[in-house]
Length: 152
Image (cartoon, rainbow, N blue to C red; front, top):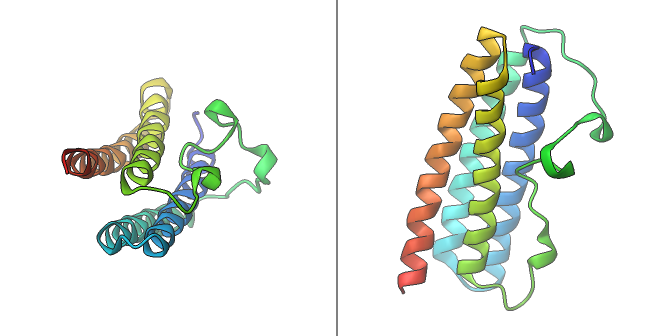
């Protein structure tokens, strides 16, 4: 990916998906009676909305492509941060929800990291590295929670 506007279009979509996923997981954990994890996912949704706002702010300086959902070409055919809620059920455990979130964040990190390593455009590289770093922070935080809940 060598176009800043295209990169930002993907980043906006990815961060929209991340915010929605974390909000859905927070609601699921409330339903399943785990307020602590619900609050954690709520915070993660907030961080995703902050990243989304930053991507949208940056896009204001570019002529953005108009992209329908089918125009995006994602690894594995779907946004890295769009977690299917098929696995959501009345017996969903905190461990399972955390694993779903971790998997998505790792895929989000890989998406940005691959762009940073493969682009020829220095501005795209800089932004992809920055977004990858944010995803790496989310991965690290989720790994702490996963470890904590597996130990319990």
